[in-house]
Image 1 (cartoon, rainbow, N blue to C red):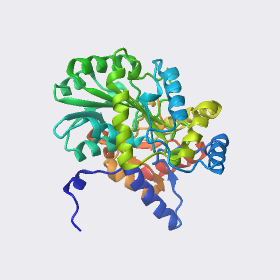
Image 2: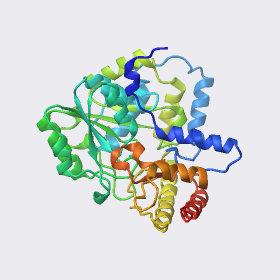
Image 3: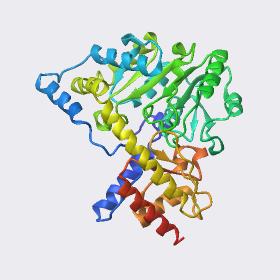
Length: 387
């Protein structure tokens, strides 16, 4: 079968590849500690599940409007107005099956072949994958350990030009746990106005900021008309499999995203959206509980990694990932991640799967219990002593 040549440009997500390999080892009887997948190990709260169950029993199993249920769009608008401190109305909200479509739809709606797109490196691999898929020009923005995995102003200024169409930012950040400051966002805003580009702001980990508070570029004066905010329910409410996300942008941009929804998914599941309303309105206690547990795990995993010879790890300020530096170990990070999976039974991700600037690092998810994290640390320490 002959496939379209554009498929050669479409990448993948290493977390799912490593998960599959880890599951294959488990099928052979091996015990594996999973620190590779970015998925909370908590169950979806009962009140959310009950809301979905009741919705299905009441017959909410048919099509929904492609832009989303009005009640959920209004609920999201109220939530963003409250959390980002800027007025948002329902016409500026689009509901999607997971937040990832907002990345794809934004690029489809805004980026032409040959346009330049700046994206974080290391960063979520789907950003670069879609830039290549659309024949745009990739411009990786280095995120450096020396500045807590933020960007240096001079690095961003060197990349921005009048050919820049879109800048992608992610804060808190996957894979590093880095968090952008208000000053960082104001620098971006100034460049966006001067060079006339849009900003796709991936804020899926907005509720997981350990030091200080989450800052959104949507709240920077003058940026509402230039920002497409991405958020969703997966990480905040332990709803990864429910596939419920949303974009907040201008009404004009929301119409484009809705048209893309019509041409791809038709709509997001109605009962899932009803569950999403319940999550936003009545689940703050669960969010606080999960946040506290991730905060405790962060201390355990960072202290543990720093106690292992050859590793060093700065304390992530957000999300649930540690990004230890392994440049002093005898194996490159890609071979090291394979070694830890096969020899130690610990699944982690190679930093270079997130971009060139990730070479020499590992991504370690602490979305697992403290007991399992301790087991993983002991296994890593013992296996590295054999190198």
